[in-house]
Length: 289
Image 1 (cartoon, rainbow, N blue to C red):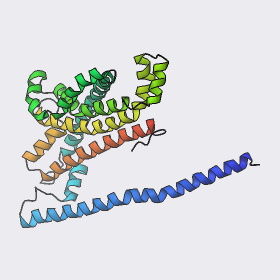
Image 2: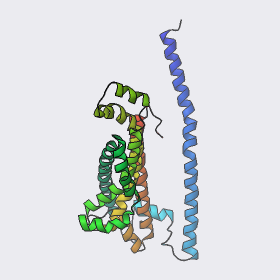
Image 3: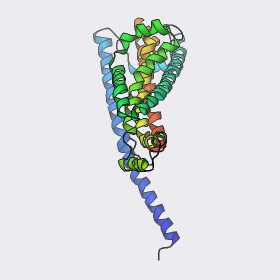
Image 4: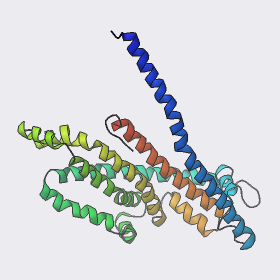
């Protein structure tokens, strides 16, 4: 007869085995990106040396350590302290606000839009084409119209962000709502459950993994939307988009690259954070990858 102590010991052994087996996997997961990063930095240094010594255009491809210095301890050409660091972090804060507000609107509109389409096929046939049109319309062509209608400050930046980030929320949420188990749907029909009950108790829980996949994608797109809107609506409080244009127009190579890198890192961070949120929320019963 197996005792409770033996069961506990067996579980402890299995847990320790899993942890030990997980360490090599983590190493295998992390070292290939680090190797690729090292190779890319080496190529960057080679390109910077070529543009500096051969073509005499050092501002086009600055050395990586100069870009890092522009982020950590920016200075003017004469060696005096520069305000670029303050401008960079202030612009990042403004872009963060625009992207998160736009993402919040995209989540609410996208989930509501998908829920409406999931109620009936005729609603899906009526509304889904407009979601596709919104995805396919070139946003840059609408930017002047948006600016003329809503001004050139915060509201227009948020609208551009919503338009760019909306479609993944609509399509993924609709897919999730329609992926509820067929046997469970039939059971709800046999119980004569209302549409609202089916939506809340069956479809929405089943759609959560797909919703978080869409959220992760839309989160990354919201950063792109905020920067694109900022580049065109240059009034009000400038963000990273304006800083990119200013540093490019002044041929400030290290500062330009530093701004692009910070914008990229912010986009990656937003993507990873919402991926982690999705994994914590639905990872127990769904392989969220």
